[in-house]
Image (cartoon, rainbow, N blue to C red; front, side, top):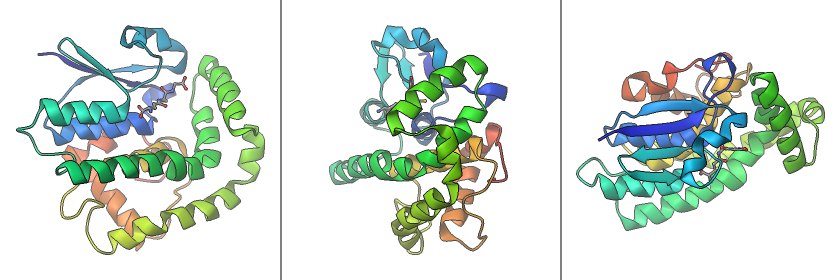
Length: 233
Ligand SMILES: N[C@@H](CCC(=O)N[C@@H](CS)C(=O)NCC(=O)O)C(=O)O
């Protein structure tokens, strides 16, 4: 059966979407290797067949699934013989809670840094679209966000703290082995790796950085298989 993943493309083959990285890792966790089709922001018509305009979109034979959480749930149900993404119903509920925290808090805490950084690696036609939609979303210009980088970074490091506490207890967010909770969080750091010229976790002994290195090595270096913009791995 054919398996195709539609994901976001930036200039020079960068793959910056944190939502798509969750799905890439979920597929690898299930031992699945999709054909990857990368599309620009201004090519939403290429996923119109899914009934919406965003990526990721997974096409598995005649099934079309959009939204990273729906895709993870689909994979868990469709491939039960492969390693579990959630570890049962309780784990699934916790993963969903973490999903909301990542979307509402972790990603938002970094958007002021990473949205302007992503803008810089987009093709000109995509830049116009991205600037208009994101500046409207955040109510600020990219220039004013850039001016506040240090303030955003200090606030983000406070948001990182529960992750550091967890990673002092176990090698992965989900315990001895990685699972969907790790992929949810790693997607954000992969967004940073693909866009931001400065490493936001500079201390080599930071538990978050050690975990990030471990995640970069997973699945034969899946996350390293796309270009990094800066120094973060
Ligand atoms: N809730 C969705 C969010 C997906 C999402 O925001 N995808 C971005 C990836 S760049 C997108 O396609 N945005 C399209 C746009 O802003 O026009 C999920 O978890 O998959």
